[in-house]
Length: 506
Image 1 (cartoon, rainbow, N blue to C red):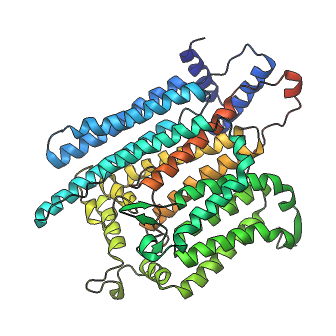
Image 2 (tube, rainbow, N blue to C red):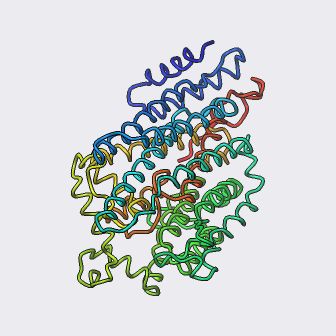
Image 3 (tube, one colour):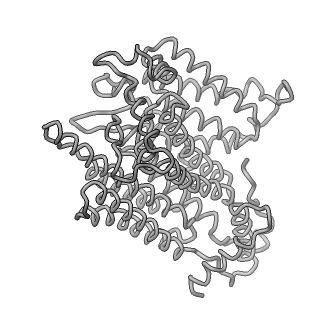
């Protein structure tokens, strides 16, 4: 049967969902129904929807090309050869990933890859736009400019796609990762703590010790540790969730866990506090601890774990605030960004946040237009504050649209977790999707002054090799899990009727 007809058939199921049922729920129910039908009737094929993925990839590349054209037209008044370069990068990355997915993960979610190609491509366009602004600024000041970041980001994008393809080729079944959970946890903790034990000259940047810098090469190992520890957390909680779900005392209508079951949460808390104390990195510690608490909630469905986790992290953050000047400085800048004490000559720790707020205010509702603003005035505009760069030039409407793209990616990750049959896959997919959502929330909250600035980067969008490689690794695992969720069952009908049914992870 032609694939185009199959794509249309599945889309018809989603369009005719019952009133009041969300598209994700409808798609999930449709997938379950199709899987059951294919189990009972082996001649019925489930659509792979690879043609839809290819069409969406073309649309994503078209948006990236239009964005790059707008930047060059606004900045230079004409198009240049850079348009071909920055159109070829997302096109080549998307096609390479699509062809491998079509071959070894035929039933994977068709939306994830186009969404990531769009984000990665738009991030590359903005980094190139910031290079143009910095070059103009250097020419006005009469100094040479040799710090272009866009070519380096092209290289990192290529390596990210290689990591993505490598994981898909090596990890043919996500359940294999469960066997190596403790080994991966050991490697993850080692990577997470390594910068904190190295001398400051090898690991410290802007007061946070989260880097490894050797011979001009820098790496942020925490970006890889977050993936490894998510795998371990999912595997561990699958084994221990029955014990952790047991109720202890009931306080104010909430069943709290037994005291003897606090061990895993306390261990995660001590690890994150160690990162916060030694590395002075509020963002990474918040990311990991929040991830573990949410995985606990997914596994046990007990709100008490969330309450206890929030209280533990708040207590640890308060102690760190009392002990470390770096944390006090960031909180002070967050509360009083325009205070005189943070705007002394040759010492302006709040300058970055001020310029970010000015840029967002300048952009207003519709923005100044790509290439027509001055986002290069914000320090570290291509890394920590790339969201502010977009906010200035595409405005509130454009920024909301960008966040919707992220929301769709996170939603598809949760949908894969809901649909996959095994408990480990459910927790892993939900954990990875939440990881992307939490990191984005912390970044946007820091840029808009909702939370103190943490130094985290926007996934797929910001400049940086470690962040980009880690994000592509997350995508590879989500694609593999979504393929397992939609792949036709191979068990006989008699066994399929007694097999474990997909359970909703709340």
